[in-house]
Length: 177
Image 1 (cartoon, rainbow, N blue to C red):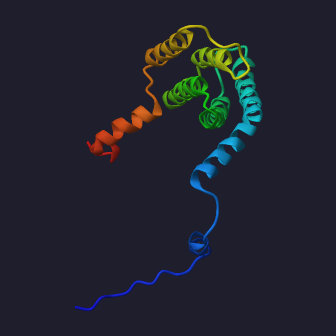
Image 2 (cartoon, rainbow, N blue to C red):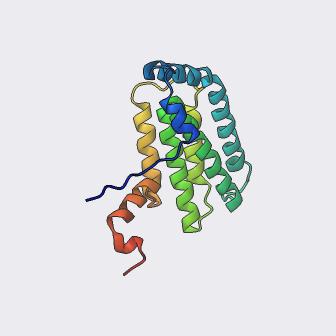
């Protein structure tokens, strides 16, 4: 029986990994966390700008309808806010914006341009913004429960929940009957 030898090419990364020295893992993680904390104020300002942009889209129209371009822009701003909220540990903002994106995406998929459910989410988002007064007691849970009722009224599920349901039904995901 002969054995085959496998040779791996020497890349710049493999050479760096093999070199001694560097920083211990815990020290590197602490340094990274410090770097993130230094950007917290800037991220809070960016979240505020994102909320203001979404408010501009929603409350600019005298009608209770949004153009599809505004809805797409709301999803784009929402994605930016979710990224920042997740990075900096703003859990409540993350939950509200995810619900906003679920409802906005649901409206787009259904062909509706109704601004009312989006406006409710934007007002809730303003309540939990980084520079807003902290919520008292169980107000956070009530806000999330009411937003869930809005989504349920329109029969929208979250994108994550929809993807999980499709994954559980391979024939539906493949487009088979």
